Image 1 (cartoon, helix red, strand yellow):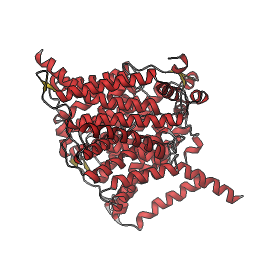
Image 2: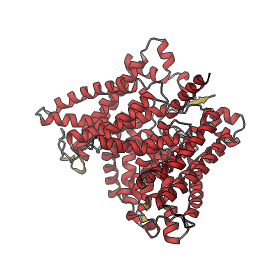
Image 3: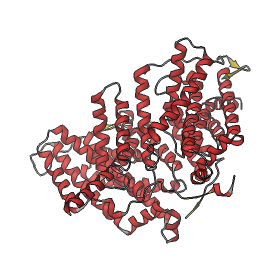
Image 4: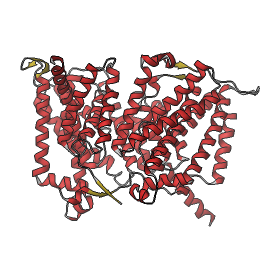
Length: 337
Length: 292
């Protein structure tokens, strides 16, 4: 084996996305916000529920996007943090009668701590090795939740039923609609937080690590701290999403949070565009609606139809929805001239 | 002590399954630098093809050879049609492609051969091997075949022009192109060989876990773990990793109280991660030196 073979320049596992290209412009954001605010007034309850789930999965994909697109670390273990968040909310609400809105910050903090701690051993690993480690976390989680030892709190294999909150202040809207607006509020808050995080000093540190770890450490970035911090923040946001998910679905059970969920979130990130935060919600729409479409095309071959659709998407837009957004932007600029 | 030896023996026989799969995983990793999530499903599909041929009355070894050829061609075809266009796409997009392929193959196999569990014949018989109840002749044969494949791969990579070209294309693609190696075809060849090795693994594993579209799911996870444990750059490491994972899993199940079938996998994985934290490139992998 020659010496040349042993030395490689560190490849870009994740593309370098400049921080300005990570968000939407003000005008577009306002239009999207208006649509999100107005649509629930005219559609059926089931569609409102689906939109709620879209926002919730969108948050989870956003969290993964901060970790992968922001700091360049890859994770297949997001479902584990989602599960921790969901169970935290469910247990607090059902066993200790805590108000649902107050359970979310607790879920976030617990998951932040869990993610930060998990980030410590994960520091030594990168690429496929990190993927395997996070994967192990994802496969272990449902089994841990089933353990007889925790059954007092978790309800074991049966899981827990969660009551859906009513609209407060005597507002006359359905539970679904209230939950949607509640979720929307939290989503906007977390989205703004994430955008600002990536624009801050910490965000620049994440991106420096993503683009070149050695160069980043030479510039004085504390690589270990920021890598674990990225894990913590990502896990925290996923935890809040999990808590919201538990309230929206009204049920938590170990088998809802298997590796399949982690893989879906990953697909959502790729379809939305790695490193493009608004894309998280487009990706989440993909993972919620496309399996249903596939099912309606053919019951027996739904998996194959889903695979073909996924292939179509990645063939046409290998960089995800971000590529479409860039094309639109260029088109708009040309029209204006 | 008796129990301990027996559990080690049992571990080796399950480990042979993982070693087989890990070898295929390492093969594709050598060629394309990613883990192929659809590897297990490709192996499962090949195994179904061989089963179908045997249903049509072909003898075992003829079906075996035909399946090898079919898998080799199939692997090359999949690379040419589906993954060559994605060569310039980001890595994560490629991984999404593997997941799509997984979904397509699994669903098609389910539709063609349905999800009922099928018996699969073994060419080695299933009587006890050398009087031991723990290893059957089939498992001994499987270990033999795994070691044979390992030796074959070693000679291929070490002593043939093609093997050298494949190694060159995988480690330094630009330089390899400069000396006239068609790197694009080397990747296709890697896919073909990985598919063929996977099909052997599938046909060896099927008599143990029975044939059905989801048979490879658990095996692939352990195969990945074994390959990563042994070091993704080393076929020898993959085989050793496979046996180690098998032994780990059995000892954990026997000696730690309260560990049922469900906790075996997480504990085995946790052990592997512990090993990785200490030795990040795996037990036999070459550490890769990074530069700015």
